[in-house]
Length: 150
Image (cartoon, rainbow, N blue to C red):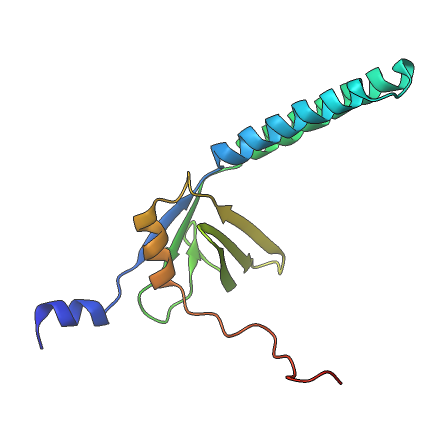
C-alpha cells in the first residue's frame, strides 16, 4: 500500500474556529440605516416617525453589537468515530448543512438546548470549507416523500 493511499484512508482531525462574520455585521448596519431611512421618508406623521426611527436605530445597533461580541468557538471533528468537540467539550447531534459556500452547523449541548452558527465566506477559507466537507459525515437524504400525491 502506498503512503499516499494510506493517508487518504485515515482522516485527521478537522479543527476550525468560528468567529462573527464581518459581512453579517455590515449587513446588520446597512439594514439598520435603510430601516431608519425608510421610516423617515414615509408619509408617517413626524411625531410618530422620529421616535420609531430612533427605536429602529437603537434596536439595529443593539443587534449589531450582540453579533460582533459573540465569542470565538473552536470546533474539532475527529477523524475517527468519536464525538465532535466544541471548546474541548463533546457535543451531540451535530449537523452541517450547506447552502453554496455558506456552512450552517447545528448541535445539541449537554443541557439539551440546540445551538447554531454559520460560517460565511469571509470566515471560512476555501481550504477550510473543503476540510469541513470531508470531515463531516454525509447527511442522509432529506425527508422521504412519496412519488405520487395521496
